Length: 336
Image (cartoon, rainbow, N blue to C red; front, side, top):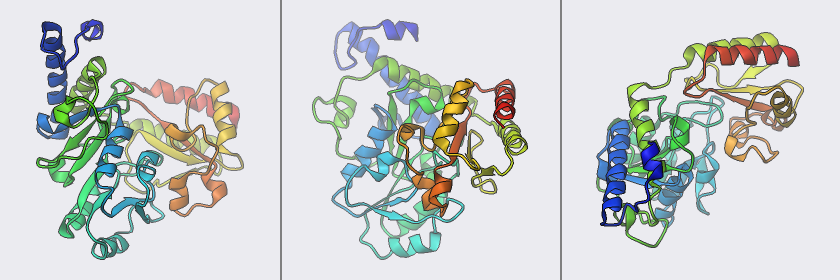
């Protein structure tokens, strides 16, 4: 990896340095394809999940686009004129209403994330994909929060497009991928050179792509299961904070995200208190936590504005340990 970062070759060049860089990129493409169960030629490297999401949405902007009300902002704000579909109090799609809508509107694109980034709730993507395909729709899933935590395979998921972001499963920031079902060919978001088989212009981020590939290989070999850590964390929350509510605690979630509603305090205030104790956490989405607004995810699930403004997201990473949760427990007790 150090040698790759020290390299100077442009992966699109034909000289020796360029060919060396190209081999690094293509190895990473194979590694990412292995994680997703796809063919390497269906992997487009991007700057992250946001770019991948935008490429899909804009490729279908001339058609009806349906997205869930709990999607990441890069989907909800990806294009104008899209339509959102409702979720239940558990943070899952209202399947009856969605099926009716899919069979009422002219077919286009539907987007449903695989794991919600604020609550950790696992979405029924295969079931929605089957309904959508039966009605003639194309299907996209933002799998950014699922990679390395859940099995990912384009076939069983039933999707046409899948978005990834490297830093969510141990890779570097600023690199991701859009994975396609064979036969799909979305228009490029960026215009310029012919990189990525003319599907994404711009000189490849060789070092970032190499890191993404290695992270994909490791995630496939050793997926994260933090179920024990999550139970330890949530037990500590209940014991130290009377009245705390764990969002969707009876719904299937990934083991790396816990969303807690803090009693009698705003999330902004608590984030600062935790920060002073050396604990980094987020209020709602980490990507937009600089904004002091109520969580649109919790609002869509039916929570009142005051509750949606009290949400804290506790996330564990690939290298988190029981000692980390024990340290958090000490902080919880100190703040209670």
